[in-house]
Length: 498
Ligand SMILES: [Zn+2]
Image (cartoon, rainbow, N blue to C red; front, side, top):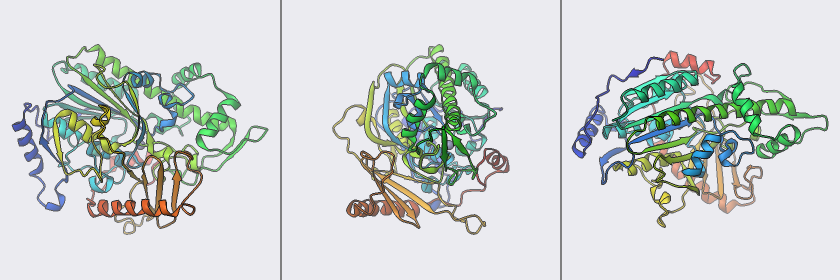
């Protein structure tokens, strides 16, 4: 897990408008074709950076309704619960896509997968990308990514230093070592990616101590626990003898069949998933304690979210990637500042990962050119400051895009699937196929399709959704390079279909 310093690393840049402008122009000189020019630019703005350090933690495959800060009835995240109590918790935050690398690339760029060009796991972000790492580098911040899977290296071209390590404990150790090496006087942007909850299908590597701690803190068990889980996941009732017939293999990411024949089998699966969440929570707490222990001057901003949720039998789906019901899109999203300058608050407005870049840009005093608030994200700073200027809007999401050359490469040309939601209604558009329309307030499990019974709402949402898809596709970068063999091998090991 040797850290890799990118060859393009330019060392530290003095903070200042001129340095930023020079760096930005240098970033874009290597894009000869207008078609390849990155669509977003950073410009010096007013004000100085609000935070001296920003730490982004992404816990892979974490559906919000399994986070205790989001009301889950098991104590999966005691540390995040405390962080949320003193910071800001967005109750309704949505991922752009239920697939790991494309979703993370959206967080880093503020663009949809069509536009940033990372449409599949293992693909790479263009070195010319105006992403969060390049934004912070432009301000003279050190940037480092600590990744729990190797294939995410592809979306870190702008980071000064990248470490990939498949064991999460040593990964956090590496992040802590990096923090202790000369970070006292430095400003930095650190991204920590934890993969644990993705591994719930693996019966061999369960974080047993975390599972024991979870059970110690969560009194629900047996039939009572099952009934709560059943309501959360929209499962059928169990038989009197504890039998349970779950049909949920159809849309599994890996195509694995998962047989569940009893309540006991089901609760073992939930135990594994929740134990991985609890373990991730412990690791975030360790990193937080390490940062606190350094007594760094100034202010640290913490951001915790996930790239997507997980099926876990909801809507008959085991994993993620191919479907975008709420259990796959609704993710935790927490912000907390070390000086307690934001929050405490729980915010109900609908927000999304595309908002992360505009929000951080505003806080860091950088102006962003090329993002359209009607198509992309908006800064959440007005919302956090209680401004009346906040306008509710719609959030777009999609399943992982179909590769442009899917047919050519002999792969299955999967259907396209898009979603548009406005906080009340959600439309799912299948191409080809029929639409689904849900009233998320009355029917949060998305069980009653209103597409036929409420045609006016369906037609209006569909019109706006199709207009967006047309624009995103017109801006498609495409032509992403092939996946390097090392990452392809890892993706096969992790059970992705390739
Ligand atoms: Zn993921």
